[in-house]
Figure 1: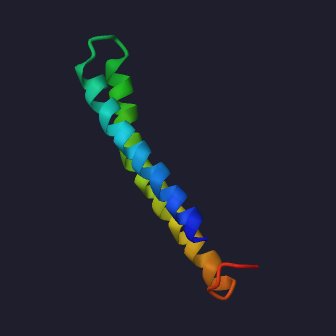
Figure 2 (figure 1 turned 90 degrees about the horizontal axis):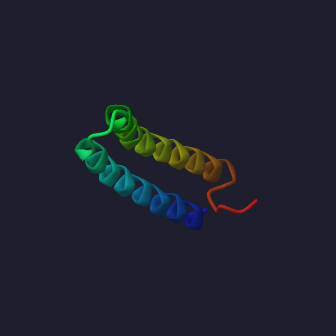
Length: 72
């Protein structure tokens, strides 16, 4: 289970960094869709950490139900 935590953590870090970069790019764009794209990037910047936290809680709960050793 520790590998799963690391994988989800790395995916989360990459997604969050991508959202920050996209937020800046969308804020500087002058297209008609820039405002919608910026709003979506800001929402994802908030939603991604929440989802990662939820996944972490599920993994912890699964480990505690399996006796804490992470094996079934």
